[in-house]
Image (cartoon, rainbow, N blue to C red):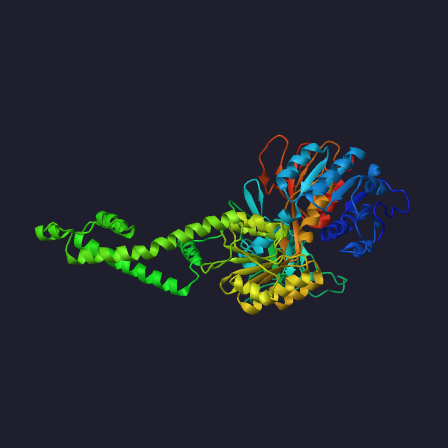
Length: 640
């Protein structure tokens, strides 16, 4: 550990490099992305070379230097040669620290490309306007949709021009799929998955037929083919060649060959890939979580009962409610007027009933006889029970809101998702699920976590405490939940929460945040109805692409693999000018799924003209692997 204000500068001068500030998991993935896929020199600035992922970053082949400074000061920026760098990524620290570092870096190098992590996206958009060449991204916002979709057991989607692109698997793939994005999917060995495998065009079948039959192949209408005719025996002068024009005689004793259908040639037909496949599909609208109004009403009613924690009081209230309903029915039967019955019942509940006088009874002008008077008495007495309970509920609701206390999950919480950990990602996931109308319960051990106030403002219940997961999950009503998402920053803690959840509810779906790929592989092989995601794995490609000047619209998960949906602009001087779909897709890892040409603002999906060359002002939307997008970004910055 170095003393404050001092660091370890690079051994030799360096220029045209990229600087990554941070030693967390996102910085680790981002460095790997830049070194392995973009093949650019990288200098890493960390606060402590012995903590977090800094030791692993130092072991990455291709890292030019790892510099240690306890604070991200101007001296630290000069130590990593900010004046000659091409790009700067700020992926650790608070929003305030990253804003200050970004503005300082621009002062040293006005042309540098700056990408900085911001939790407050609105503030990040405003800071972008102050930077000449900068982009604000949120790793948690990039990864949160994948976690939320995994918890609900459906694929994540990315919105492009009113269509929602998502990944469909096996039987869910429809005929209008955009392209196959993965095959060889084996849950027991996720390393076999092939992203964006080579696919055949529409004319592939005709090409195979032409190759099989050749120019003289007897192709008949309807796909029938005459069997090959036997060759005549070679004569002494034929030297083994059949005599041209010889036709074998067909007599009564010789049966003609029966025409038969062409059998598929195993060598010519592509083999069915082992395991499942995944395809990219588009929907016209975002799929919503279907929750009926009846279920919502039931949750609201039961949630109100959470204030009545005494079982005896609940019994008394239920008996009183039954008595009121019975008395109401009696009044309605006697008067045959529903509106008047409601009116008099409400007055009786409020204690404002008008009793019959003896004189009225004697004169025959009473309100309706003995049974009506009995019913009114019952309603009035029950109203004495309901009034203080309603007052207590109102006071509790207003009082808890003013005190800023988080709500505990109520007895009416059903079919909900439990979010474990209220860091940046956990807060994003809980908020997104809440916006979709899905009930959410959060768990957090740190009472000072920044996400508690955010979810409390949405009325989401929070279970606080550092006790055993078994007890915390019980308080979060695990028995009645549909899914548990473990989103703390520690793989072991997340795995512990998932195993405890599965032990308490064998049918619950578990989604776990895991950084280690081997760990995730064992997780998939061990548990069913489970999913694993990595925040850094989902976010790092977007940060790397932004650092190169590209815009990633979203990431889609194929188990632990990532498919990127990016939009590229062809600008003057770009290496994309003059390229067509063949040039973009042939090297592999890229599929052009839509195009918007300079002369028109309309987005053309499935653009079939593979020979049209790109011109300045054109925009293309691609589905790409990490290496495929890196290749396109490298071409994008090249000069013609």
